[in-house]
Image (tube, rainbow, N blue to C red; front, top):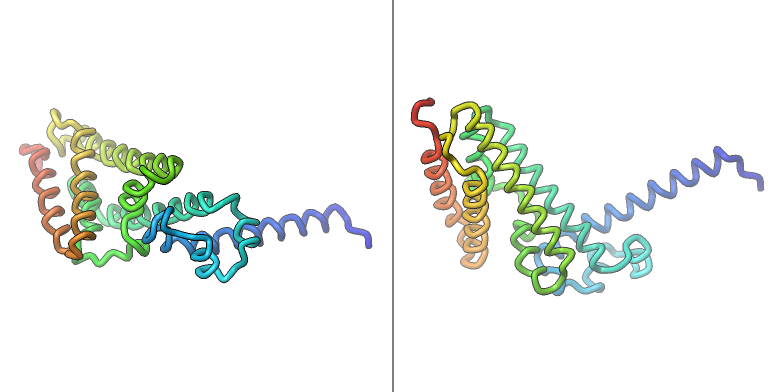
Length: 215
């Protein structure tokens, strides 16, 4: 049977599309497992059970379990980032935008986080002892978040919303430390309302760095 170059191109495109679809299916099906059980606590049998695929199908799309875990972390983190950006996008003022990063974690929000909670906290704590690649991924995620908050604060300083002597990097670090620490305490104690107090503290912090001469 003769296949033209066009036929070969169409077949190649269809193969790539199917492969990408399968990869995405595997990632979405296993993301909650990795986020809840961690890299070390997740076995190949868990992946097979979640996806209903064979070992060959899974490892035909990913080099190994770590590769699946990395893709799952990226997926979970992107979900949280989208939730935060959606909340931030509801506000125009820099103070409100900054507080919105914390409000996403307020119990009253009932934010639909990825199954298992915050991937930065879950992966960062476990990966420090199990996977250097995943630890670096979590570290990069935290640094990206810090830079985003610092930029938001600096933009507020430039428009006189925040005090000119505000240390944007330290303030961003403090906000993230409060959020992640609050998430850990809430998870350990099974008391989500603990985050409400953390959100209030962050609100007070934002008020302290706010320029008193601006409304």
